[in-house]
Image (cartoon, helix red, strand yellow):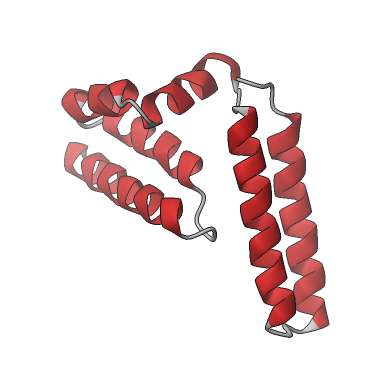
Length: 117
């Protein structure tokens, strides 16, 4: 079972790294999931992620207070706006835009109602 948790954690870290470049993939949720998986599979990788100079503080803020830094909130908002803007520019069907707007609005609501780190 530890091997499955380890594999899931590694996949989540890979998705998080891709999410740094692509606004379609959220970085922090994948890092949180990776931390969860590593806690069940590899103490070494779990500690590495928690002590990482870039990712560690985000994970620790979330674990302590469910908090997100204002700069991360702004970056998420810009990414979401970019994704929606691309959809509009590509002339995606109206129903898809409506669904996308509702989902992305819910995501933004969640992000902006979290405490600041």
